[in-house]
Image (cartoon, rainbow, N blue to C red; front, top):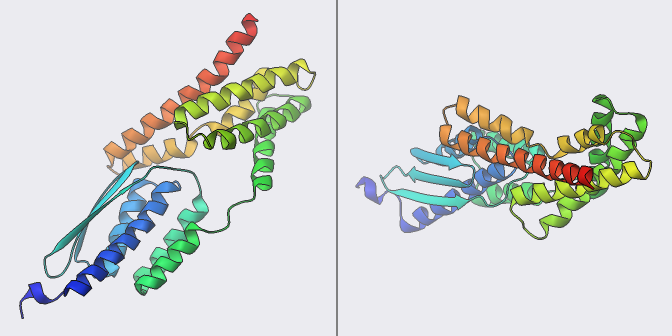
Length: 263
């Protein structure tokens, strides 16, 4: 029997469905803050665990392309566009855990899809807890960088406004750079109003606490890791986006400060 007959059409379709599920795992990693090397390594390992003899994976910040070869020499290619990216390292950890379990003992297609669906649809942190963390972080950093207790309180309040603005503007599906600029400007206005109302004394110290909430630190770190690992294209793209976001944040705060001083 020739090697080309090892995989029937039904078996080939099953492997194609498996590839789709493996791409789902890679997409979850790329969407929630994993570096490129982790995405490519996870997809490669899963492909080999499910019987592909070779997997060539190319990942950048906005796309994943995988070509995998079966033992009969036929190949299949799938592409996945990454349109939204957030930071949720818990989901990254869960996909890593599932991947290790699958590589040690490959499960069926239904079990793999069920595991990925459970991660994708898992319970998110409650809005109230997320809001409280934003307020606490902004307040703590404001005091840490030299602000008074009242500055810390003002930073907590303006941090809450920043959180609400970020989530409110997400409904409009704005470009992330424009969104960061807009939300930063709204937050800076709220800081100036709070100071004029007697809540807070040093607007610069208050704004420092708020700025730290929107600085793309993880994205910048991942870009450096990608470049160190040899993924120069992805690293440069990630770094460019991170720097543009940081500039947008600076423009949002600086523009309001300049206009506020002129007024």
